[in-house]
Amino acid sequence: MRKKVSSEYNLGVIRPDLVKVWSKKNKLSPYQIAPKSGFLALWVCSCGAEWEAPVRNVRTGKCKKCN
Image (cartoon, rainbow, N blue to C red; front, top):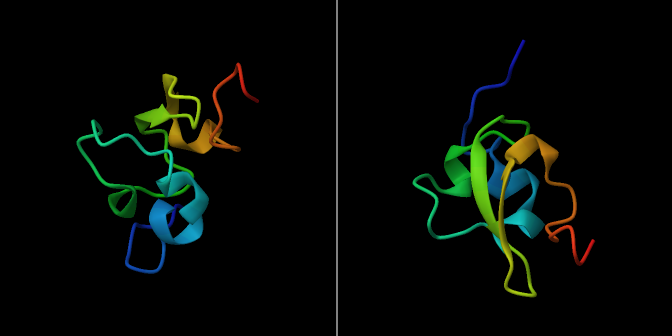
């Protein structure tokens, strides 16, 4: 059974490290997304590179070049 997004269970709370690389271009905030969601989000690496990936596939918050 999938957990529903709540104030205690969301990407922003469970993975605060990924909030730093969450793009402002996304229509939803990381606090509206489940940590294991298939939502295709835009991410921004510290090197400035942007990439799209499902939330559940992002582990380090770094692009392929920096990873």
